[in-house]
Length: 255
Image (cartoon, rainbow, N blue to C red; front, side, top):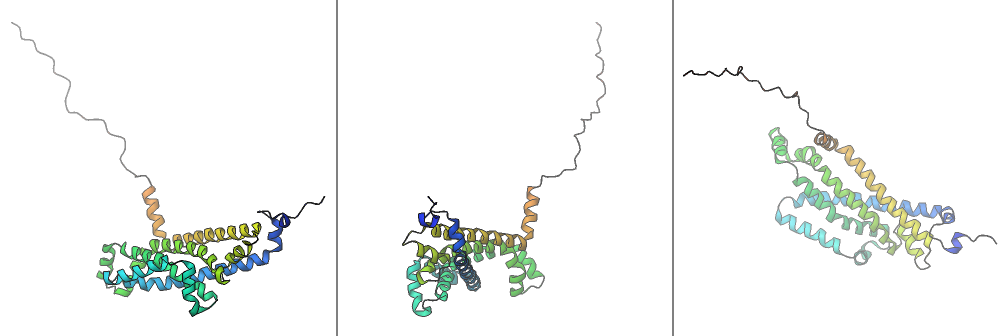
């Protein structure tokens, strides 16, 4: 009796599915990556001026942080429903929703990074004649990069996961495959699409981590300096030196 195909038996791990649906998987992965990259880049471009506005004072910080936090709490189904009249069933609908979700993470991390810049560094730059713009781009932003990149990594991984929700409007990348497979519980398709989402998130995080290390070499230098043992030039302790001579002999007084 011939062995049944893993597609027929509906196995979780099925090499035949990967071979026969490789083009479908590739197309969904490319769409997923495209939506994620565009959403994160636009989110970063919107978050940066918002963070600069928020750091001007409490009267700006409250509304900016409050609005971005409220947007993050809106369920994705409700968010897409609100945006549907503006964008229709298009990729722009999904991208706009993902941009709004990324703002709360990016704005807060940019603010935290700028606030952590040492005041001494800013005063030194002003003393050298740096204006506000030059101070921001050449001093504050480079020093704030570790916090900014940390926020970018979190936002990117979050966006990779949220992109699957775009399957509600047929623009969810790998999420489309998961949604299509759920009614019939097509195990191989659900597993393959889910694993690819995880792989995309891990690869994106590693790439951004590498970019962060490339852009902030001083963090590696300072880390290595802290880890290195303290070096001393002192030799072995010298023996104690005394000026006392041999003990004087005891004198006996004869009676």
